[in-house]
Length: 344
Ligand code: AHM
Ligand code: MG
Image 1 (cartoon, rainbow, N blue to C red):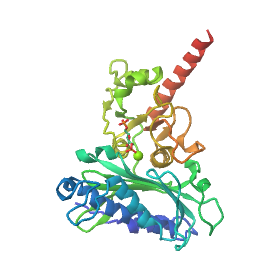
Image 2: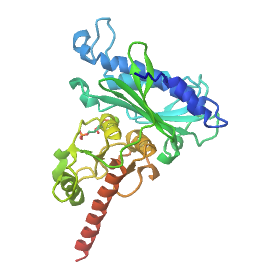
Image 3: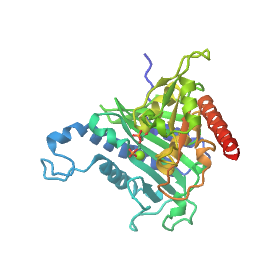
Image 4: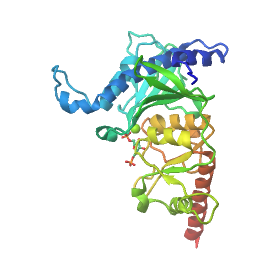
């Protein structure tokens, strides 16, 4: 049996050596994030005990207010990240406006965006949830407080992105654009150990992940695509398997490893889909592309969308390259057909 004893801190340092002139700031930032992830993981694992120790919103046995887990994760990330001296501004899915670095702390050159606990409707059922993060270099002048414009950069400008999935074990996956690496948290000594070296998403998908309950609101092109991947007879391949957890992090993590496509489309009720460009789609697109996959909004690359507002939503089709190309073909054909119909 071979034991790969590469810890996350060591890996981050080794990665940094590949960039001549690196100051170590990004590495330090990633360390701080990993620490926050460990603390959130501990709290997530205690979630079932909340009913015993005190309901959320109530006081627990120690007389302390028990926070909802997503708010706990949001607060924890801010507490872990605001004083490291590496950030100039933050933004969270849980807060309407940008989050400034308190004046008493050093202002750094990076920008951090995060979804503290994605899929939080799954918490009470003990289903996997996750934290997603995205890091940019600031565009405003050094030394000044970060701005909204620092946060509203295109996804291609990310310098790093990652997620932590709190599942049967806690796994942190990150990329700085070259290679995607996964680390499993060893609960015994509290360290993330390299468990998934250089993750490459299989080019062919075997799985599709979409909330099929919304079928009647979909556009025809999407309906046809889903029928196509379900059909076994007209191709030599087996039909895709349907797998949908309803936690983007867990759904995409599984598809990254096994090959698959995750879709949260625009539909008749939600013309921009549901998921957020800055906190969910951009970081996931950065990771999946670095693993050899693709991510589009139906037509264009997610990473090239110019964001207009912090909490903007965007449709997403993300996963194995061949599958994303195929769904795009179906969507475009449908659009052409509709255009022809409306002319006649
Ligand atoms: P949240 O940010 O409120 O947790 O919602 C995001 C989640 C994603 O993790 C998941 O992919 C999606 O919502 C599921 O939505 P639906 O229940 O409409 O299928
Ligand atoms: Mg979310």
